[in-house]
Length: 148
Image 1 (cartoon, helix red, strand yellow):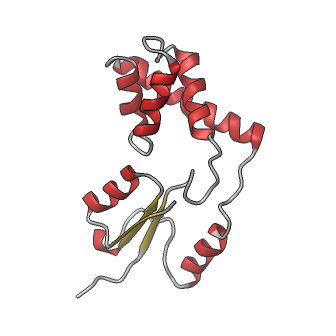
Image 2 (tube, rainbow, N blue to C red; image 1 turned 90 degrees about the vertical axis):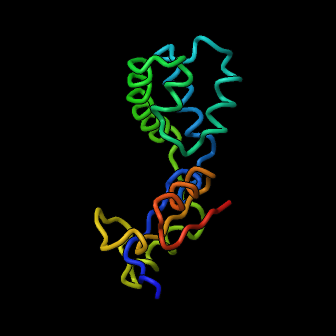
């Protein structure tokens, strides 16, 4: 017996919104503003950011800072501001068809944003990173999809 889906969880950057490097730029701004990645060349730090894309931002900054939890917390807070700045400066656009797909989900009765479901098996997860897919699988989501 399968549980009918109630909730669809969608990643934003790279899944429903064209990223065009905005996340990487935000990581760099946050790292530069807080000095969190000063212990390594930025190219090396950026490689780590790319490999861990989709994982917890504070975990990524904790690694970049050599384990300094306070520096990681400052950088994570700075990342949110940097991301908002870049979006404001450059704008963002949807991945073609994303808005229609989300509307289609809503029209079919699914909740695209919801804080609770009757079961994790009633959740669908879609994302563009290994971490997105792994998190859906580890959570036991009823449907998990990776997108390019």
